[in-house]
Figure 1 (tube, rainbow, N blue to C red):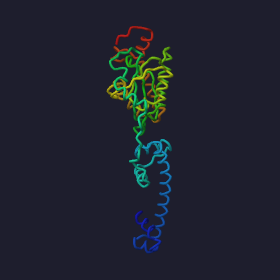
Figure 2 (cartoon, rainbow, N blue to C red; figure 1 turned 60 degrees about the vertical axis):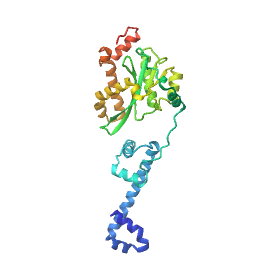
Figure 3 (tube, rainbow, N blue to C red; figure 1 turned 90 degrees about the vertical axis):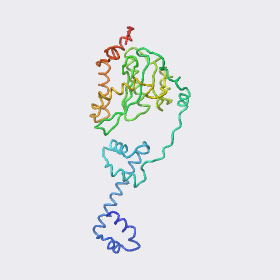
Figure 4 (spheres, one colour; figure 1 turned 45 degrees about the vertical axis):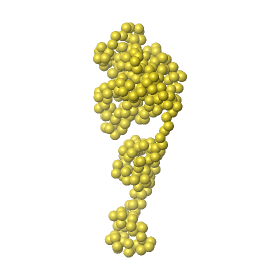
Length: 300
């Protein structure tokens, strides 16, 4: 029907409205009704297009599923996926879009040139509160309709999750939030960050100037980079595997990001203060941390 109305619109000036309607078997009433509906839909599509463009400008790599989730979160209105895909096609907004390849930063080039020597943990041993492993983890919530990012700073020897942060994006703000959390927890133990090692992969967040300025210049932390990503950072990978297995279903039931953060905080508190760890001779991480702080001999 829409195709017939479009044909009438295309040829009515040259052939006349009545002749076009007769040739296509359309009544005037149907034609005017469909035309009005089409104009209304076009106006609605134009409004949706503007909303879609605002998402694409911020997230150029998003496909229709992620765009739909973003629109729902921003406006509180769910867009039917068929309509969303049609509008993307009609206005030529679908992937593939041109994504300029970002050039590696000077820091990233230096880390790459350093190779394995940028890994300060390899072949060395560290005591409790001396070295921390970290990485980002994406986890689903709201029944799988939304995604959150979590970052935890894990004490390698004591298995203590000393700092964490939850957010909707994997970025420097999330990383600095986790670092601030660790700083507060260390201060409660009368410790600071000076001299500790923080080990992670070569993600652009971890090679950014803001991240390194905070760690190296302000907190005097030593920074370590895994050469082979997860393979050279097994401590946090093991932690994430356990954490998701034990808490993934619980987080999946959360409706908001704030609820996700509350659940993560509760479960990390349980992990640190109540859960016995076989790798710690069935002691709790916080017990081990307190013993190390007080100068006790720790045999793990």
